[in-house]
Length: 158
Image (cartoon, rainbow, N blue to C red; front, side, top):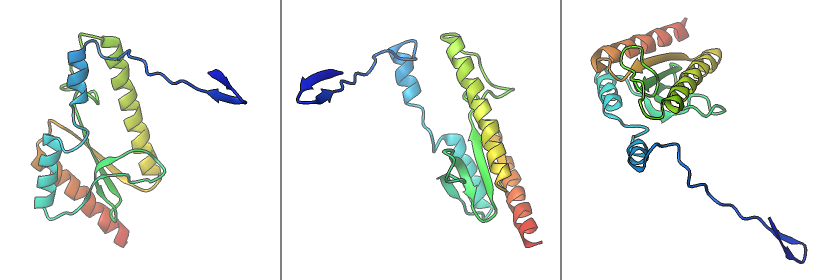
């Protein structure tokens, strides 16, 4: 802060040039990763749509919680999350980063913790949650989603 006279103060904000990435190439690669409309997500959406189900895409089931589900069936209160094997720590396919290993291990740990919290918050609000790994067969995953949506709709009628 600097006093510029007449009772005015100027606050100077600077951005750190430090990056979490181990190199400029790594940073560029990570920044280019898509947050939605990935190939596995599109395949799941096509398969669910082919079963005659309609849904919202990249939608917040709970407005007060800043978490976005990949597919949301609002009336049935079903939220579907497509989890990437690296980012969410898939037990089958997660690879441990060799560069900056501590950073990535902590990032995946926090992501998994946030996933559990999201599931709990949604379930407490009466939602049903299904998580699909990116490596799962989209047709089989779509069948699981459809079964859960039908179950949810049926229990609403009772």
